[in-house]
Length: 197
Ligand SMILES: [Zn+2]
Image (tube, rainbow, N blue to C red; front, side):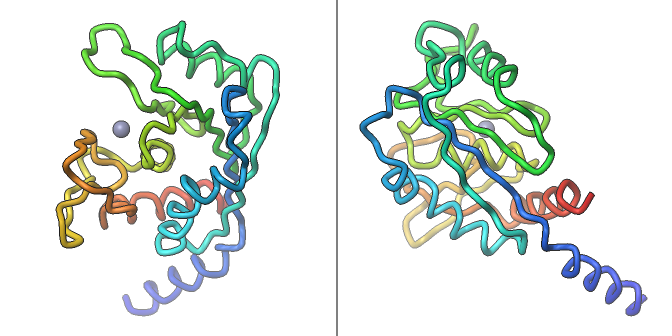
């Protein structure tokens, strides 16, 4: 039993060299916001958290000015249609996640009373995320890595804060800038699965 556990651990560490690529596609309307600014405000806190979650290295690449992708008229179509359009326009790879970043929210989906801040494909590896909250990007990336609302939680730091995949964003609560312990486990397991192929 002990030997089996040791073997598993050793295997995991030895195979942790594969890296994850995250391709971010800032919408053309974000031309005035530099990649450095986006990285500082939206990406670095997530990378800091991911360093605690997985040994896999993560490379973030910005892709701009791509016709049919960074000019999707997302405010004129339903959020699900924006995601579908994005999904069909960018190439797929099992070691990559691709996210369209927008300045505003995505409006309301049919039957919903609330504006959508982000949406993730139920299968790897596409999402859309608005910059209206600091956490929509990390929330959707979490979904792509199998994090769930059910496994998310409120924590205290010391004020009550929402972990990244908490379903309801409430202004009175702060951000924890981390995933719940259970979602950390789910994400680590998922990355080991897709990157150790
Ligand atoms: Zn969600």
